[in-house]
Length: 241
Image 1 (spheres, helix red, strand yellow):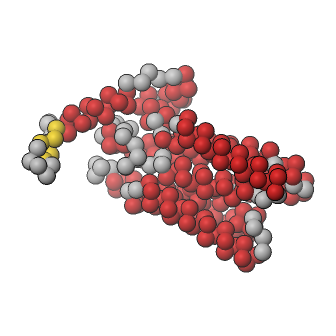
Image 2 (cartoon, one colour):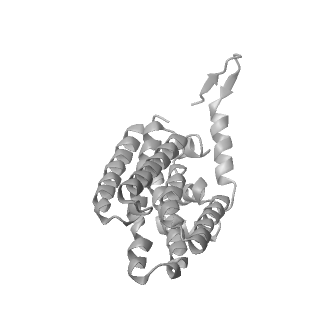
Image 3 (tube, one colour):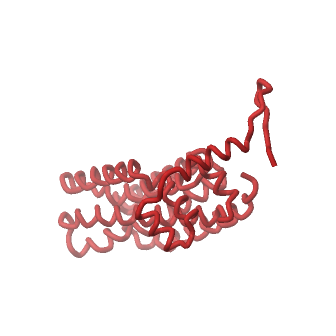
């Protein structure tokens, strides 16, 4: 059925044509080796295409992430400032917000009209973004191990993964609830900065937000609650895009 809408000048806009143009843009590129492998693994070429169209998994974004973490490594090695542990969670959170579609992904509305559920697309993208950023963060942490005492290296190197999960889940939940990736980024970054500054002031340790094991259980609780918000919100949004 052909749909149309009218702008302020009274000109009709053929939405069917818009959908066709979006579909042409999304499907015009031939799948590469990684995408074909993902399609076999996920058993869905459409889901694989949606995954590899995720903005925060595209090469320019990945290069930017590596550069930012590289700056953190240099700062930590040269000045002893543990920036990697504090940068990695917020960097992953920003990427997580832009795994959500409205306003940032030209294929989002198209994916919501496909047989694949928008929730499945979103959760697949979120897991992929988290995994990629975790690998980048771990690699950066390993590069700085030589600057820390061996007794402190292991918990600090891996300790930021738990707060990263919480910040990413919070960012995604806000983005989905507000239907805006930018709002999600603002909420996640603000929450992390406030937490880091507050814990630093209380404990007099710059890295307390990632080294205090007493915070891990609250982090996990926040992550679980925010994941529930995402699941509920995506269930109610289907068909309303």
